[in-house]
Image (cartoon, rainbow, N blue to C red; front, side):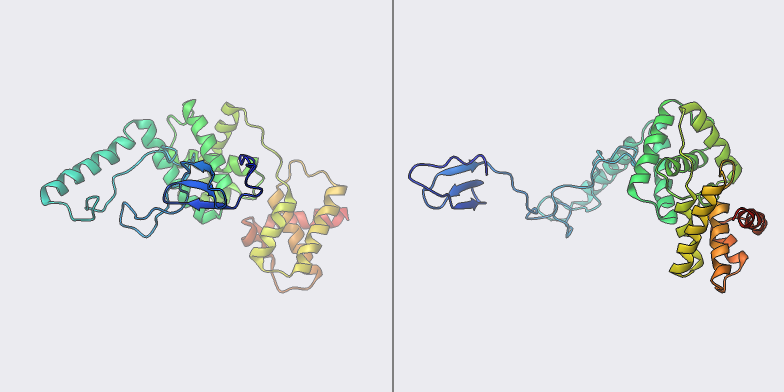
Length: 295
């Protein structure tokens, strides 16, 4: 510890942590190195009569309408000593609990964010997204909500469009079709909201790299590791020969996987690859001829 001042009569401090008095002292000379230390261990008891005795709750997050800063009245009808509350006090606490829940989303804006972020949790589980993407989605949605871009549009559709924009910015391989399939929103509505979001917020979306989609399609189909590597080589060779602007990266990645499957004589059909990539078989057939002609 750089804060320790060595004394002349004590050549080397032997530190002892006195938890009861909150002090760190030297066992040899008795000099108090630090006092009023903070206890970082678990609480001796839980105020909600639960097993978790941690000192803090969830961290601050943008994916909650109150950013995780609000407190709630617990469901346990017991006082601080653990005794059950009287019948008259139970009704009072229940009424306070109800108004506490209502006041947390009192305004229309808070209710909008609460509904949007509750749906976002469900999409996170269905699509297998990381916390970073969820935070990015919540950030973009909050900015759009502050500029009143969400007004006049359904919450679910605009949230799906925001989630797709976050996936594009973080280069996460998730398509609009996958998001639409995981939610109850039609593809046309998501595309409309996405165009409005990009235009009004002046977002600059990076081009999707087909290389990142190959592994996901190959894992869904269940091909071997050799076939996956061959698909990446086919795609890399095609990128060096042809410009990919204006072509669907998902279709190109699915085509590379299918060509690698036929090369290694694996028992997967064109329909299996199209279903895993969520594209049509016709699109893969058209791109197969183009890739083979370029080689």
